[in-house]
Length: 403
Image (cartoon, rainbow, N blue to C red):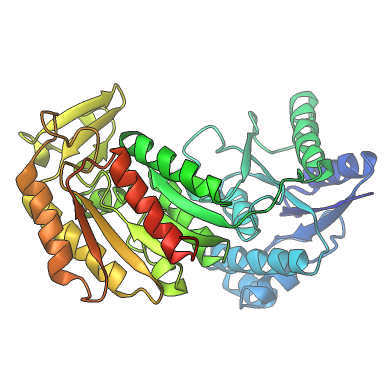
């Protein structure tokens, strides 16, 4: 059955290129629904959705954008507008995938439209920026960034093959049916290399009881994605075992998930277990990237490109307050589990980050600032001990009415 692929781009400056893409999609038996994002010029060919509609969705008329000739305003309006237009088309069942291409401005506009669509919807962005840092464009969505190699300017022997390959990618995606997998209630768990044993054991327990566990690596985007899926209603319960992203947010590490981490489950009333996993560490890249102000601190070289810095009692006290205040906003069941013999593999008796006073500052702050009706379970274990993992999993089963 033919599919419809939204094709997003500026048809005034890239009209020939998008005409080629449209023809390639149609040659493969599918429909291209072309959306123009031009502001100043007229489209080379007639789109299915004109730029005036995109501008209107962004809150400003195309006429006004042309009169003001303010590039910054135009970018802002068209970025907001394309996101709304594409989301509306998808909600109405009118598109099955999305394709765009261009330079920096086109990449910002095109990927904003892609990020408005759910995970699983095919998204391909041919970009001059695809070989660099794409975090700002991909965000927490499954956007495929396809390097243009040469500038998106004209159709020649190199670019034509690249455009055709990219079209082949999105066509292949829209033609691929979703695998038939038994749908089970979804749980989310946060994990780091230093908390792999506990998360794996909890996951195995929950799977035996009929749940599917999505594990998110706590590297910034992992925590953001977890929060996003909870917010969107996919998640039945959260095993927030690895809250380390808050250490990076507080101290200035490279793997922060931002200040809204731990908000979604509390706001949505989703059952959650909170463990201060890996709050003994802040993440930096190679040693030379560590800020000079931290000279003299305790470090551990996890690998050549990752340097871990031990958090202090003062930092841990603040982290404890933050976690408690996040949990205090919960409208659903929540509990804390505190491992008295360390919050990571490195924070264990005799190990590199073992610092009982720092852990105690963390735990005391949690208990001091926490709502009196939220239970706290202190156990004489390391976070990765089987006994501790089983207690966490059993409490979640209790919250879910399975115990």
